[in-house]
Length: 401
Image (cartoon, rainbow, N blue to C red; front, side):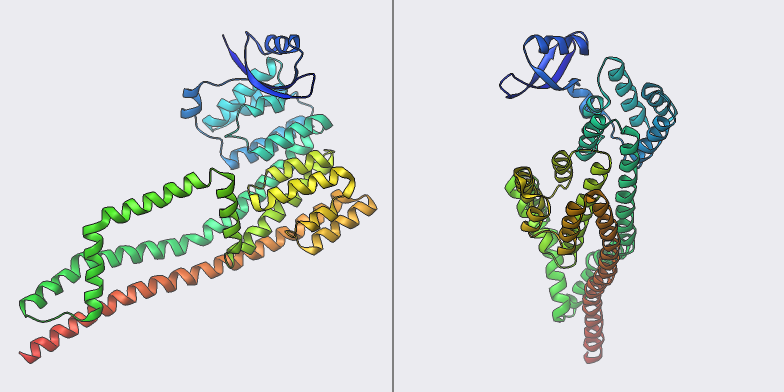
């Protein structure tokens, strides 16, 4: 019998989560209602093998999907028909699979947000949270449009960073390969030749040979150490303390930290503005926007700011108290609260920080390129000095003999 995962509230307001066996979604809903549970989320439970083997919907596919679905809904096409068309015509197997299952869930009585909740790996948390709120306002097409624009900006920022890192990565890879070839195949020949002449290699050459000999003999220790460090990191970031430590350290890195800070501020203001423009209540919008940041240095203070806002402190004061946001932004929020144009002020702030983020990304990438080239130049230069010193030593030894 099919299993349905549910989240519900008891008569006392206690949240309960579990799995209910039922033939259909409606039957599961009736069973839960008979137990005096108010259902807030209900969806068919996937089997483990499906979860492990299925492919994931890419961000660019999700962006196009959101934009096309918004256009269909705005044209008056029923959502079931729109989903069927998008699933059939998509070139992506992941999109076809997801659309097929969402269509089946809608026909079984699920809402669109409930159907999307079944795919946490395909739809980001902020996406699912915005859809839940959008269905309450009846402006699903507008919200989908805003989501597609946000995903487009996010993808563009990622592409800029990746594009800027291509050249330094190629330089670094070429330099590493060159150094390895010289150290493994060329320098040992010098060592053998000097040994035959009973001469001593120059200091730079001996240093380089010692490093390559160490790596050749103890490579497994180095590899084990790297694996241990990677394992410690992966285990650490699964805990709240580890993630907070990582996020805090990244924010302190010169050049990188300010870029991350502007990215978080831009994401928060953009999502908050989009949610409010869609008619989502401010407390719910704060919850969704905060949960989308994936940075505990910001998330924890913002949760506290939301609690203060609900108690009547407004939004500008608690946001300023976190000390994480620029004064200009908090001032714009204060003006928006006083004039009743908070969504407009947030949109203006988001546009401003989007431009600032572009500038920060360009600045960061222009710093990365020369830094990588300089580092690789120093490494290759040291190897070149080691080779030239060895060759000079050979010539001097031959002349003396």
